Amino acid sequence: QVYLRESGGGLVQPGGSLRLSCAASGFHFGINTVDWYRQALDKERELVASSSSDGSTRYEDSVSGRFTISRDNARRRLYLQMDSLQPEDTAVYYCHVNFRGREYWGQGTQVTVSS
View 1 (cartoon, helix red, strand yellow):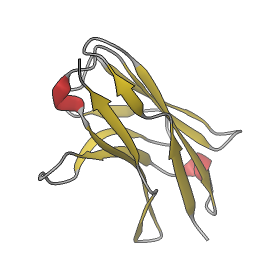
View 2 (cartoon, rainbow, N blue to C red):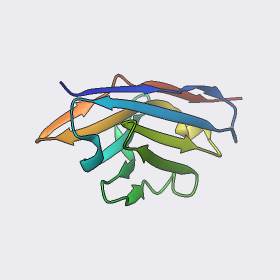
View 3 (tube, rainbow, N blue to C red):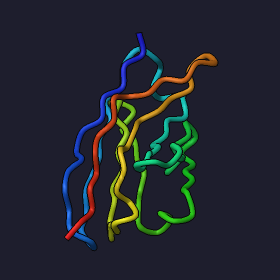
């Protein structure tokens, strides 16, 4: 059973930082690409950042240079360090993996950027 659980969301002022964590189980974490997505109110879910098993990463243009994705394969955890947060980053953030052709999602964690 694939299981993903996010934590670390909250309310932060513009310019602030948050670090999201995703705990994963049920699949071989170290050899799979795992991602962070987000979904703002009344908008489609979008890919924020990806971490591949070979160590490569990629980012959505609006977060590049502000967000950093990382992983700890031994602890089976995915992280998203978010700096210089802006109100437009407000969304529910989801951990995601495509494992054996199926999409798996965590329950999401709310990030709200507001003064």
